[in-house]
Length: 347
Ligand code: MRU
Image (tube, rainbow, N blue to C red):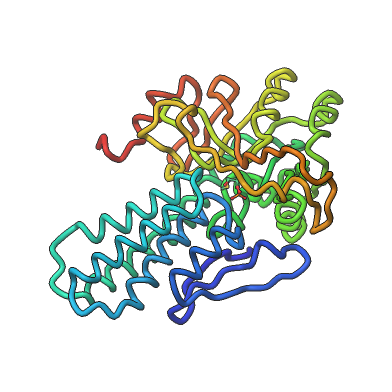
């Protein structure tokens, strides 16, 4: 299975998601500015993957520093972290990873720059390993919700490409398929950036999982025909009450699933939970460039001079979510207490 991001000979190697599926190319970053650009331009994307990229970018920044003493290095790391924070606003995994790297910095009084650089490097390696382990655990737990013969609808890409490997929403699908369950996946194309059409169906095809690509507006049609048994999506940020932000269009799917009494599962590692916000109303929603809506593959499809909105995410309220699958447990409503129990600060 594809490895989205890894450390290779002192560089960060990533698959270029902006040109998939037409070209399967990897690129390497040898400095943090390159990683920042890759996150902003969505050559790497998906909540856990951008968190991992940020951690590795900070490692690169520290490694390349020629600071003459620890204090200078600390100041440089502060600047790099601030730049990382300003790449994309919605996925909390990014901020979680930055804080995790900062906690290494503040964990003790560093006497020399080299040992701090080494500690940051090993923390980013640890984050990579934890992300893989978390996806595997999510896969094993989530597969228990999938029955032989299920038709599953997914939105955006929450597969291997959105993590280091295996994915979040797709991990239970991979596990269920490997357990021999006969499943079929409907993949929303996911306008405007086509993560479903470009990435998800590409991943599923590689793994030989039966899948059908549909446009976003077809989901209700297939639900109405009784063709969909469950909806499984990822998330970019889950609030303390279980409200979950994911790729725009997810909320509409949840409403449709509710009307058709189809289970709606949100699958995400605990690094996607923002324990500091009480509801989804506080989740910052990224507004992206209008050209993503007005243009299709570089071709203009809308008139000039019109008003365009392009929110990249929406928030599904907790009441529409059947369960939240994390690497620790499957949580059922009411979510508040169960989410609070997962808060590392409360241990
Ligand atoms: O804008 P993107 O492609 O980074 O958005 C990604 C999504 O919305 C995914 O569904 C989400 O990150 C969950 S992936 C593990």
